[in-house]
Picture (tube, rainbow, N blue to C red):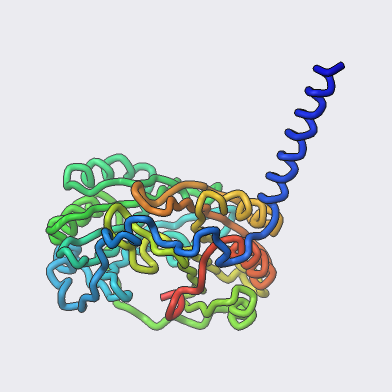
Length: 332
């Protein structure tokens, strides 16, 4: 009888713990609430991390020439886009606008120790993938993630995260250019004004709690982590490798296709996944972007088709389980 009572007690404790864990996973986390009074990485508190420094567009002229197309400045970052306009991709019957989910982007950041960090997200077809990676490796550019942004799409497309840190950004840019030259990535096109987005963007902004912006015919909104994010011994500026993004492609009548990703710490992963599914949003991929980030960050890519405002409300509930704030200055 004593053994039976002991087993019964253990069973009740185990069951109780399971209920507590399940409730914690399903319940929203209040934005900004954290156990530590100082959310910075330990190395940052000890003054060991290297800060990014502001640069001017002219400082990156040699990098731009090596990449073979003009870039622009996004706060600390020299940013260059390589949209895959050469691809006609369908997902669940929706033709994907390159600005929705087919945009290669690379960014360079200068640091106080005179080093330069490259991070980027690159779009390649399945046929291009292995040759693209081979050239990157030959040129000293690391691959930190290979994953997908879309479900049931044709042709098969992959997204490859690239990373390099050193003192010769021009050599890195040449390596990237050599890898892009092994793909069908098209030449740059002259910039044009974005047409009006056929969505109620005011209602979307209200639902999300952030001001978005148009990129061609796609509407975008961006959030950044509240914490200081480090990669190795360098601090990542807001917007580099640690953002949550929401991208809307109008389908008419207030409906939209949504593609984006949410950035999470480990304790936020399950609440986010639960909130997304409860909001009718499909999960595509759960993965990482960096190998040495602190705190450790995970990303979930998602997809949805439906009323843009209602989906925005669902996304806001998922976003509110994470420690993010609207990107300063909007989505761009």
